View 1 (cartoon, helix red, strand yellow):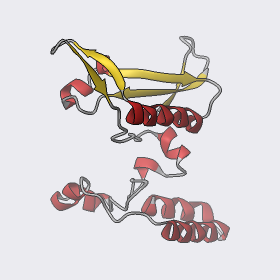
View 2 (view 1 turned 180 degrees about the vertical axis):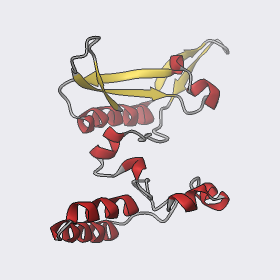
View 3 (view 1 turned 60 degrees about the vertical axis):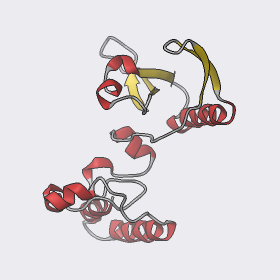
Length: 169
């Protein structure tokens, strides 16, 4: 999911685009442009509306499958699609999730993986980035939001709030 402009000129004609790739392919193939498939685009629908439609389509294939032709084995096969993960490393996706994105210490929206830059640059900290951290809970998220609202009320609250968001995600 990303926001892009469809114009060749410098005028911004913002629309949202969804792409997919086959996660079962080797990484060196998945990263090639011809293996990234266009799914949908809209200048009118919100990203959440687009992803809702994509999600429903994927769920339908999980339930019913898609019959296609396997050219290697010369037979019909049934494909079943799964959402392995929905990548979100760009600012627009972070904004949609009310998250600070990669510019904070704890950059994952679902778990508490991360740490200070010094921790992440260490060998053990780097390895921990590939492990699931403690899962976020609604209670902890609500407590953090309340703390940030209180910080915003204080004199100089904007800078204090930026620091709190960067440190917690």
